Structure formats: structure tokens, C-alpha cells
Image (cartoon, rainbow, N blue to C red; front, side):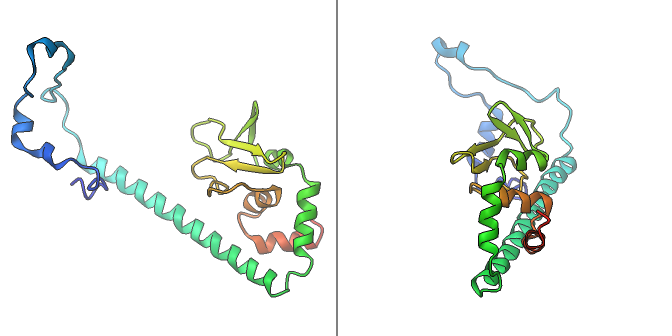
Amino acid sequence: MATRLGLGQVWDHSCTNPSRLMYAPAIHPNRKAEYKAFSFLDAEPVDMGLLIGDVLDAQEAKRKQEEAHRHQQLRQAQANRLLRRGEGGDVLALIQQFNESTDIATELAAAGFLQKDKRWIAPTSKSGVPGVTILAEGRKAWSFHEGDPLNDGHPHDAWDIAVAYRFQGDREAAVRALREGKL
């Protein structure tokens, strides 16, 4: 069961020894007050179907998030190939100009982030705790929010925020909008 729940690597199999389940540990009489015993005899039985369902739902959500991240990386790689082949032309210069002319705090606010003191709360935040920090003289933001497309272990500039939130990660559409002056 522990393996099915994804706990196989952290499960202490020695705890399933019948003597562990039936007998209290040997305790020195002087330290008896330091130990507490708990009994589950009066508790309601755990509905394992619900427990397993919750774990499997969480695993499926994580799999979907990883798949979306892989898809975004593939689109990014495709856009990078276009730029390397020279089909991007002046795109890098346009992106640099966008980053220089766009205040990152303004871009975060436009994307739905809420400022709380010096940090920001992502629109995808479930906890409501600010997990986005602006760094690098105000030119980059780092997100620590689970589920935030900017939470990939790297700092991001205003362009990255615009692509992630205005274009849902579609860099090609963002580049077209940039070339057409719609950004």
C-alpha cells in the first residue's frame, strides 16, 4: 500500500513488525513522563479509497503540470531555433527594447499579481503568501509559487512575464504581437 501511495522510498518497514504494533517500547522509569502513547481503537476507520483517490488525483495533477511545462519548453526551443536560423531578424533587439521600456512591477500587476510590501502574490497562488521577488535592479522577478508558470528555477524579465500571462506561454504569438507593435 505504501508503494502504491508513492511512499515506498520513505516507509520504515521495520514499523510493521508485530512486536512494534503490539507492545510499548522499554522505557526507563525516570523518563516515563517524556513518552506519550496514542491509541486508534476509538477512531473512525480510514476510508482508504478516498485516501488513495486523493493521492492519485494529486499525482495526476502533477503529471499534467509537468506535461504542460514540457510542452512550453518545446515551444520555447522551437522559437529559439527560428531565432538561431535568422528567421527572427530583429526579434532579439525588439525583446531587449521591450524589457528596457517595460517596468517589471507594471507587467506583474497587468498579469494579475498582487503586491504585498516588497513581494508579490501570483494569481495562481493558493496560499495567498507572497512568493515573487523582484531582483537585479528591478529588471528580473523570481517566483516560488507552485503552479506559477514562472516558477521554473530561473529569474524572469518583463518579456517572460508577458509571454507567460498575456500569451499563455505561446512565444510565437508574442513575437508576432511584438513585431506588429501590439505590445
